[in-house]
Length: 310
Ligand code: GRG
Image 1 (cartoon, rainbow, N blue to C red):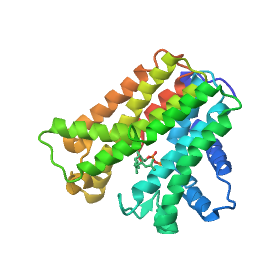
Image 2 (image 1 turned 30 degrees about the vertical axis):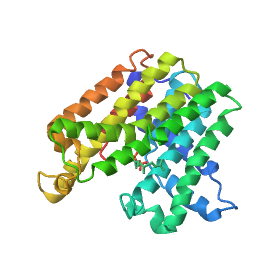
Image 3 (image 1 turned 90 degrees about the horizontal axis):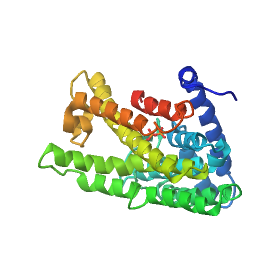
């Protein structure tokens, strides 16, 4: 492969993303072979894991590793592990006792296809496999202390400091009313920092750790990831409103009607857009200490999240 400059990268970004997601898909495919025992569980794991997400988390993990001078292949197990956690959280989020969704990525949700019992076991197995895969597949190349630090990042992103905290706050907030917009915003940010930003943060930081980053580099990348994670959700909320208002031909989106707390609801669409823009600029600011050509993929990934239409 050839060297890219920040300028030439723009035109190459889409093919860069395609190439990376192809590699990730192949590695994921190999990480969960369809075999006995528990063939049915593996089928359920593969169903969600291989059903075509955007692969933002693995990509950002590989890019962080390469930014700090590591090889892409060194971060591939960590990238896959993050996507396994992501898939497990989607399966769990869709269950009847949570969001009770029947469609995900345009396909029937895991429990609709395999039943709730199998879906729950697939969640457990994906979380366990994520840890196993990280340890087993990075240990030959990465020093044990770094493997341990990487594992710590991923388990923190799952538990009561991460996804679980976000989901719990989300559940607790249902039907809750807030004294003022500020209280609403605080609750909203807590949810998104935990439900969305935590896993993006783990992705970036794991990539950096296995790639040999210094503590300073790790912390810059952590800050970058937090901004991107939060921005992801602000953009998501804005898209929800603009999409459904297009569909309905109204100014109000479906979230405004259903009563779920969103950024546009708390601060309006315009201010939400400004906020996303601010977070994008902040994210880029955190990469200032890196060589700008080398940081190009992460800079463009931030723009991609900012500009995405779905
Ligand atoms: C760790 C199993 C487990 C559960 C923790 C259920 C739960 C508790 C947390 C829910 C977390 C969740 C579903 C957060 C939403 C994250 C999010 C932004 C999803 C959409 O991400 P994209 O757009 O999806 O990257 P694709 O489909 O592209 O992969």
